[in-house]
Amino acid sequence: MCEIFDIFYDDIRVIKELWEKNRQYHENTSEYFKELYRSIRFDQRIKAFGVFNRTTMKITVAKSNDEFIGYCISTITDGKGELESLHVDETHRGKGIGKRLVDKHLEWMKEKNCKVIGVTVSQENKSTIEFYKELGFYPNTLYMQQR
Image (cartoon, rainbow, N blue to C red; front, side):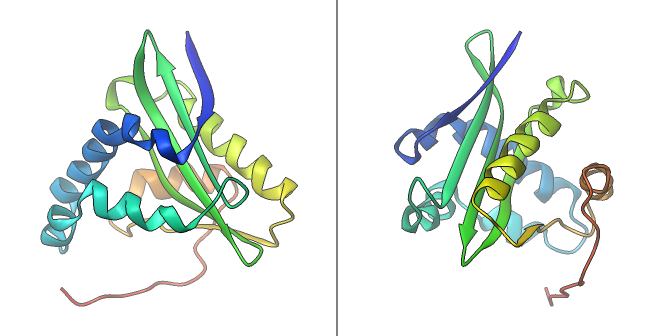
């Protein structure tokens, strides 16, 4: 049984291990930006979310048998909703947990009258691109970056 519930920013450290798995996945699978992913640190990334409050940031976790198995972080800025980070532990994928997390965030953003809802996905991450397409997201622009 998987329970899904919101947490406050003050409790964000409970996702540190999952966030690190997400970072390692990107580091291991990136062809061009391994060093970029290697250099990102949890405390630095999470500190950036400190400017948001309970009405402009949502953090939802999935928990099974006292173990955190997934999370989603979203923010709202000037009427634009952004899915900032999503991760489901590899051993729990394919069970609809990621979809449940995202659906909860999309509902929240719509309740907050977001006119635009987006997500940034590495162009190398084909399975995640397909996941978001199934949820109604499509590529709009391609941002390119030098190594």
